[in-house]
Structures are given as structure tokens and as C-alpha cells.
Amino acid sequence: MGEIDLKYFDLGKIKAKIDFDLNDPLLYNSYPIDSEISDIFPEIKFDFTQFDYFLSCFSNYSVRTNNTMDNYLTKIEYDFGNSSIELTENIQLIANGDWITDNECVTINGQGNKNNPVFETDFEKCEWEYNENHIHIDSFVEYENELDYLKVGLEYAKRLAIRLSNQFKNDRFRIIVSFSETIKTNDEIDTFGSCTVRFYKIRQSCEAKMNVENLNDYKTDAILEFEKR
Image (tube, rainbow, N blue to C red; front, side):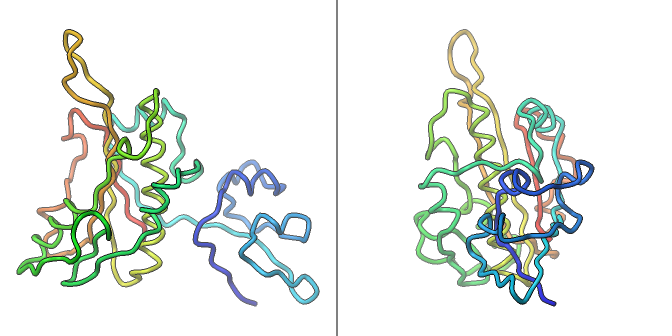
């Protein structure tokens, strides 16, 4: 008996091939994998002469949203655990890129800095990560429907969480997705529509300063915040 961890998979494609229980949409139950459907896991070398294989999923996300984000998620019919989309190549490069890990900080390599400065406090480290680890989805793709920026941002955030969890097993990270549509006044643009994704390492010594207790304090932006435990 053994386990094979899947770093990422397309739940929709798997459900299209597996005869699953309709009351179990996230596949928490155990489902057999045979040679007829094994191609949905190309990274695994199956040996059906010696072993039986089964798929079972679990969720270890902690998700918070404000009311504005809840309305958008309903509008786009988005299920955080179940929905998935393809990312463009340039966003995938960032999602799969290298990290800068010196001076007890984790930041995205290629965002302009070659190293993390030395900070005296955990709060300064969190602030640095929060500001450095952000991307604007509309800088990489262009859509007529601004809600598509939100869909891409959510997918990028989930993949980011998986990588951080796999590579920094002793740390926890908070990922924040913010979104707003273009706002006009008298045909003049006040706010451009955009989706931003950022993250920072959770440090208990400064949680009171970093963590927003009530996300509904954000009145103009839709906010989704999650941690992968």
C-alpha cells in the first residue's frame, strides 16, 4: 500500500471519465483507476499487473470572502474547489517560476529584485512580501469581459498555493485575490477594472497588524483570501 500525491490536476477532466457519485462532486470518496482511464494521469507509471489504484481527493483550504466577492463568484458560477481553467503561457511561467528566499522572505523571482533586504521585524518582512509578490492579471492577458480577469486570478492563486505548500512545508502563506470592474463617472474612467493576486508568509508575531478581521471593511473591491494548510 502506498500513496501518490498529485501536485495539480483538472478536476473537470477527471470527472468526465470517472463514474462518480453525484453527491460527491469533489471526489472525496475512493474511485478505482484502471487502464482505460489511466491516461488522465500521464505523470504516473501504472503497473496494473501488481497493484490496484484508487483516487481520493481532499481539501485543505481555508477561504474567506467579502460580500462583494460572494456576489461575483455567484455571477460567474465559480466553485473555488471545483472550478479550473487553462492559464496562458506567460502567467504559467510566473506560477511555475523560481523564488528568492534569502533573509527569511519568500518573493517571486523576476519581479525586479535580485534579493530580499534585511529586515529587523517580522512585520517588515510581511510588508515586503505583500508588496513584492503581486501581479496584475490584466498586464498579461486582455479580455473584453472583465470577469475573465477574476477567473484567471483565482486559478493562478490556487496553483500558487499548491507550489508554496509543496516547497515550504514548514510555513503557511496567505494569498489575497482582489477584483474590481471599471468604474466611470460622466464617461470618464475613475477606476480601471483589474484583478490582483498577492501573497505573504504568515508570521504569528504580526498577525494582528497584517490580518484584516472583517473583509467587508473593503467597500469597493471584491476580496478573496485563503490559506492552504
